[in-house]
Image (tube, rainbow, N blue to C red; front, side, top):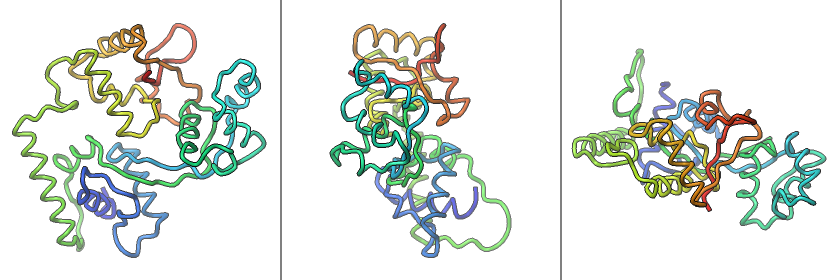
Length: 272
C-alpha cells in the first residue's frame, strides 16, 4: 500500500462508521480531486473500500437497444426506465435530459446500469466507506516498508489508534457480526441481511449475490446458501435475476452467481 493510500484511509477512519464524502478524504491539501478519486478506485479494486457514485453521463448498451425495441409493447421496463433508455438511444446523455424526476434519476439509472442496459461514460464518487476486508488489512496485514520520511499528522495517527483499539476490543469480546457468524442463520435472517447489504452498498434493490456470499460463506456452504435463496424465492420474498452485461464485474464475481442449465447465472437478488 502506498503512503498516499494510507493517508486516504486514515482520514476515512476519522469518520463515524468509517464512511465519509469523498471530498473529505484528500490525503493532503495539494492532492488533485482527480488523483484523490483514482486512489479511491484503486482501493476499491482491492476490496479495501467501496463507494457510492453518481452517473453523470451514460450511453445505451447493445442489450438496452434490443430491450428498448420490444419493451414498450411488452412492458419489460417501467415508464421511467423507458425514458432513460430513449434519452440515450442516439448517443451519450445526462441525467437531466431523461425527463425523470430529480429525486428518482440516479436510482433508475443505476438499476439500468447494473442490469447491463446502459453504460456509464462519466461518474463521480460521492461517498466512501471501509469494507470488512479493509478493516482486516489495516488491523492485521498492513506492514509499512521502504525508507524515507513519511509524515502522518497527529489526527491521522489518532484515527488509526482508535480504530485498532476498537477492532481488537470487538474481536476479544467475540461480538457477533455477519462476518464471524458461528451458527448457520435461518432464512429470515438471510433476508434481513440482504436488505441491510442493499442499503449499505447502495445497490438499489439489485444486490449481486457475491456480496451475500462474502458475509455467509462460512458458516453456510455454497449449496446451503443457494438453497436458502431458492426457498425465499418460492415464498415470494425475493426474486433472483440473471445478468445481461458482464463487463462491469470480474470473472471471480461472475462465478459467484448461481449457474443455470440455460442462459447466464442468476446474479442479482431483488427483495419484494
